[in-house]
Length: 402
Ligand code: ADP
Image 1 (cartoon, protein in one colour):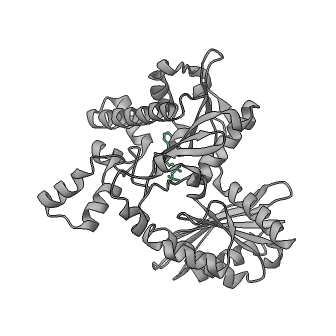
Image 2 (cartoon, rainbow, N blue to C red; image 1 turned 60 degrees about the vertical axis):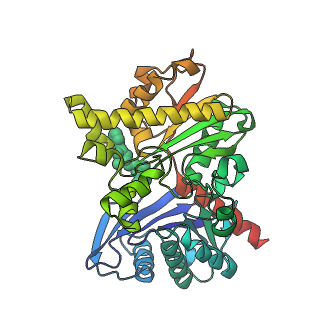
Image 3 (cartoon, helix red, strand yellow; image 1 turned 120 degrees about the vertical axis):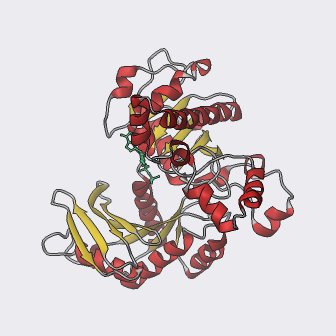
């Protein structure tokens, strides 16, 4: 079974082709600047040289055609024909309350994803463009949607409702949905596997910290709370997003600075977080360099980031009445030994103790960084959202064959 995983954004499209007999990646790549004058396709066939092609790609249909041309290319390709692709999996950011699992894409499913445009105006429309284009170019295979929100649908009312007039939930579906669900699901499962313990018995805090960042309390294998909310703005301080602030700041600043809705939205999503406090960069590598050079703005940005992250870990330990495992994943979580060290240094009240040597090891494999004495297992687990989508696509394609 060969499965193509597609992650379509408004001007980009990422893809990975899997051979599911051994879950190996045959090729992966990225189309950037869709709709702009010179679009770039970067294609990396496993075991061969990476190739880059610049051309005019005005919409997602052409992007998919170019990807298929590349996958079947005489020299750079890994397939003889597109008919070797057995199913296609699509990442969809928002599944609202309708989708608690990945699902076979039907006309009804597409209508539902469209109905959710309001809740994810930047993400769901390009997902539909990707799905429509892929269906057009690969019409005879099952297409499956995997939702970033699905894993969090297990949260109870007390975690997902906001203490605001209930009519807003009834009328406009205002509630916590969370994000990065595929990643939190994956790393919590790998954690249990790595520790050789039943997932059902574990209290895990998964820290997915990249450009966007969210924490999830995973109890008995289920998401019981997560830090992102109605949108991915809530929760931790991020690269360019504020995370939690007093909601009254929004109206206060709009009034004082005469800002429009879209201006204040852009301020909180694109001009806040590490970028705003350092005044320099949203990238944790630059922030860390600044800290080591003694730069005051970078140091403050780092301290705020670490402090807020640590407070959320405390909150989720309280939410579950304890924690057995803390998992770090995504760009910062997997790569920044400094962030992990600083956070864990201040979790002594939970009995967390990490081994500096284990923490400094760089590896692409799941690994433990806590000492044998630590009351909480601390793990670093590289996330793999594409693999989860490929596995779900395989399962659903097979179920629908029967
Ligand atoms: P996204 O949320 O866009 O998927 P990633 O999970 O790939 O992002 O994370 C990207 C971020 O990871 C970068 O912006 C950078 O801040 C951080 N990062 C990557 N490598 C390192 C590193 N070696 N040390 C510290 N931070 C890193």
